[in-house]
Length: 204
Image 1 (cartoon, rainbow, N blue to C red):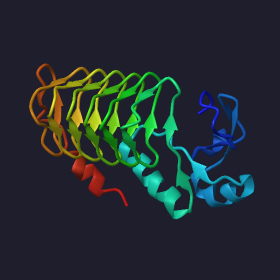
Image 2: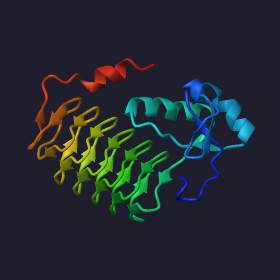
Image 3: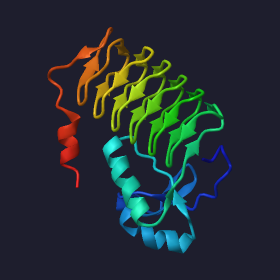
């Protein structure tokens, strides 16, 4: 956001009250999430940007900001290469060096991390996260709340189901079922993984 220069940043919000009054990259920590409505009024802001990597916590905050009447801002690093024919939802984050090619769709609250590549006609559903240096070939579909780990590769036209997790460095050559964790080359199911959908059911 500092590089983009399109925003006047009023402050950072952090739930660790011991950090209030400190700074993050020169920006003051001004309060906690519980104070978001009063902080928005005080600083006359219209929106927030979410800087949380955990899909489930980020999604909780996304809904919380919307209930407070605030927009969730798209954060697009100026070094990212984003096709004018791509579609980005509210709160989408595309970080430094990433590529989003033509025909791809990023739903609301999706995070594409540093130097990740999303090729043509891919679809990233609500609140999923593609980690640094991951590469999705054309026509890949990633379900909501799923993770694509650092340096992972998904070959064309594969589907990663919702609540799934693709481990770092994995190479996905087959579809990944809902709630499954896969790792390795080629990627295979980790039978000791706990289904992410169970974790999701515990969130209020």
